[in-house]
Length: 213
Ligand code: NI
Image 1: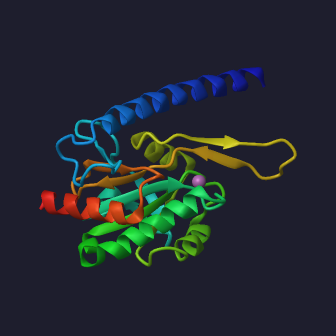
Image 2 (image 1 turned 90 degrees about the horizontal axis):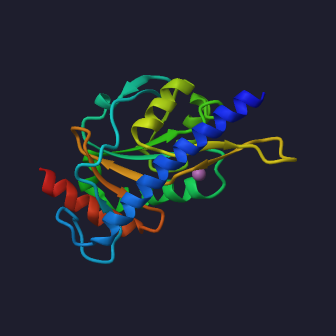
């Protein structure tokens, strides 16, 4: 229907504006590499995010079928949004989280790695259960109803859109790719980008855990 398409277009434009603003902000932050609160030395691109409202309450379902909220995770949270059918970026980023957790060693005990799907229609509880096994043994996979997922996507300002390519039976998803480090009281501490390396990420996380304690 034309009206549906129009609404979808308006939503896409709105999402695009929000994302564009976010990227611009990220670039501003990246520009001042030695801003206070940046845990590690120059050349590293994690973003100090003081004062930026990202994250918030969520109610989702973990890979065992249990309903959980942000309050069920008492320590630091390392959160990534993606989908299990993603051919390259999502597995690469989840592998990076796994390597960073390994590099953190004992210091990583207070960090909960979390993968939240943006594609709950296909990423059901059993699909998530099988998928998280491929990565860090403590990785939690969260799915939920479309409404629950949309609320989490909104809170973390994630860009996610279904893409149906002509001649393909399955759809794919366009999405932003950031790893969020949240404090135990759910404040955003850092955002890591696809170009950040696992070792640098681990060092930055360790520094931020230390400065929070
Ligand atoms: Ni992906």
